[in-house]
Figure (cartoon, rainbow, N blue to C red):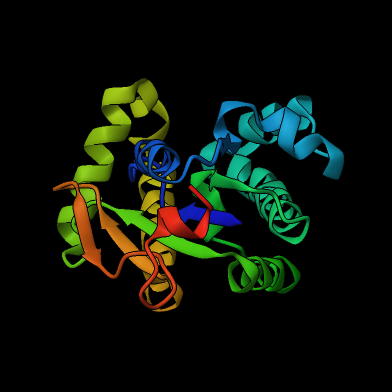
Length: 195
């Protein structure tokens, strides 16, 4: 069973993945914790990621890395990886039609899809919260630029657009389910994993 957690950077995906892992007994596969490990089979190199960052900051870096995030996610789901997949924040924004098709297929095949976002019903508040979290984790120099601010807003919009196809939405601003909870009718998530 593959449980997929998506959302913009700073949305609380890793925290939620840990909670779901404890509930289900499934391991966490965290793409951000070692992108080279998960993305290299698809052609990713750290040197190219750095090159694109130097050329155009976060927006250019995102365009490069997002293609590998979606390929790794698609592979994990298609191969039946039994895990809670903590995606990178960029997976939600796929600009190429072929990459968007991979994202759609991965989300359709996943056992459960959860969107993590602070204050998902108040996008302006969500954006302020994300900006604050990104600054607190040391990314302020990157995100607090015109390109960085536009990118986080686009990532937020793309993540929120996935709410309708998600099994649940986790409001990381208050730490509870905003809608739904991933399960088959009458079945708790933990039961679905055999724990």
